[in-house]
Image (cartoon, rainbow, N blue to C red; front, side, top):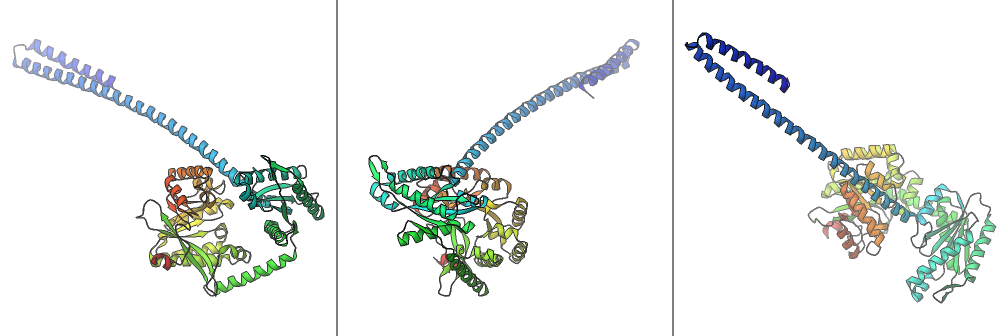
Length: 511
């Protein structure tokens, strides 16, 4: 019942009582009844006044609460607008930094040419069938004699010169690093092998004859070249072999001999035998590299499990020499099993947090995943484990990766994204996957004490990660100067040779 209705009823009731009281007072004004009626009337009248007052006050309080609620709602709307504006600004800032990182990832900053990463990516898009790897002769001498500024100018003018040579010829030019450039023809190009070799010879001769002058200094420059016509994804490696052969024989051009493929094939077969022998004899081991918390020394040191093959002479073979061979021969899952077992044994025995790498190849293999989770089921200390996801640039089936991450979390295991900042898609991963750590790529950390752009990008990554409650780990911390910079930036963990080299866990714990 609303306020107005209650008021009407109250007044009606009061009117009846008052009228009755008056009638009684007329009929028996001198009697005791009239006195009683008068007392009743005054009591009811007093109650009526109090009740009206109470209802009025309740109405006022209700109006006040309503105004406060409306004011609160308005404040909430303003807060939401501010938050939306902040999110928009953050998204724009992140998008800008992502574009900058993407540009740096695929472009040589000095010359503006596509870099090695771009070449490797486009080798999967385009079918390259001819490649010339060019190297400036005695480039180090240019730096030593004329200084680094002249060295940088040399690279720039070389890039401009080479670009002019390939214009309108449907060729691709890359600055693959240092003083090395690559000229590439894709399948179906008008160049056959002989014409391509002749063209490269002509470019080298023109470069030798060109008068390069900077600030009245004449630069006498020459280029050597290694050429490859086969190998697809290995073409750059083959061209590099040819270039080294040219340098060794002191000639300007060397063409990769297909007979070298037989040597490479034999070498791969030998590596395959070594790998099988190591698996059969438990010589696939793990060395461990420490990861320290930078500011909070009370937190335990973590250790990354790094796979190695132990040879009979006590030396260790690093994974780049055998992982591709393992994948080709479909025994990669055996390496994963060995590393998982090694890591869990150490974590359980010494009660220390450890991490190991899991690749997209592992996640895509049903047998590997079955083995992986069956092994986890036999260990009681899975909460000490962190899984570092590799090949994040190649994630295509997010559904499988997401399911893997959710299942991993159900075991109490943490997840880290490796090589963060090396590619654009990493930023999407931290929004779509339940990530606990990101390991900032070595390309951004290795020269952060000297490269302002690297520092700005790392600062952006750290700020974004911390807003998402994700902890950061810097890889490749190789000096005190780098450690000082990442400490100032606010990175949580550090890993690298300056912190500690990969060793047997017993050697690390006893040090």
